[in-house]
Length: 71
Image 1 (tube, helix red, strand yellow):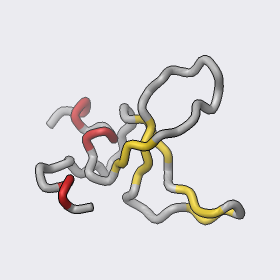
Image 2: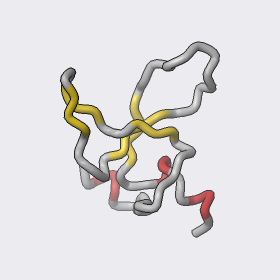
Image 3: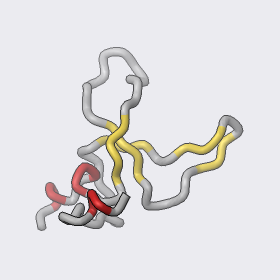
C-alpha cells in the first residue's frame, strides 16, 4: 500500500461529514471527522478532530470490506 492510499478517506476511523467553509474562496475538498481518539471537551460541547479527505496520519487503518457493517 503506497502513501497515496493511506489517506483519511480510506481509513476506517474517518467519517465524511457536512461542514461549512471556514473562509470564503477555499477549495471545496470533502471534510470528515476522525474517530480514532475521543473528542475534545470544550465549553460549547465536544468536538471530534476535523480533517480533509486527503490528509493522513501514522494511525491509519485501512477501510476493509466489513467496515461499513460495523457502525
